[in-house]
Length: 204
Image 1 (cartoon, helix red, strand yellow):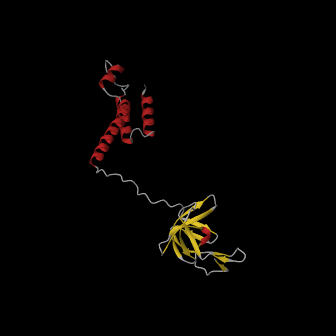
Image 2 (image 1 turned 45 degrees about the vertical axis):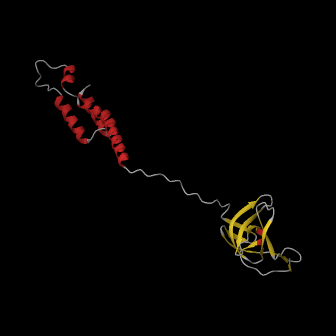
Image 3 (image 1 turned 120 degrees about the horizontal axis):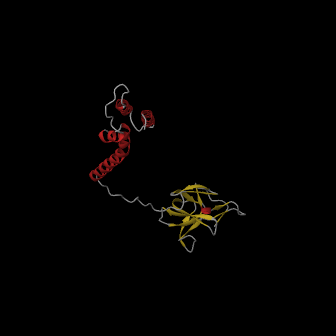
């Protein structure tokens, strides 16, 4: 390889960032100082093989650094990481807390929008019937779908809404409510309102 080829290769390594500017300058000086002068030549010029045996070529040194340094740095990083892991306190991973499932958190019906859990009032009025009518005592059911009434809650009673479910067979929601009289059961959405209203029409 000629002197020009060596210098071009060094310049390429510097451009790619493989060697620093200082390494480039040192290698360039070594290449230039290692070139024999045309004015004074030794009586027995050393062959190319002898030069390779007696001195390390700057380009060879740079390549060696490129291939040897990364594995060494990687080994050091692995050892350092293992050491830091061994010294770091180990903490037990806790399972996330499980919350009680709630079917829905907000329900909109013809009588308003309800938060679940939340508050409401029993509402037995039916202004669409002719004549208008008010159910004065509203059945609270044991389950959804409903099978039997467990208690009755008077019209206009404030209740706590605990849960809500949509019954697909009836295409309407049921609210699981609790009154101050400890009556707990499921009431259809048609009997739960957002405010207390006075009875209308006939009372049943």
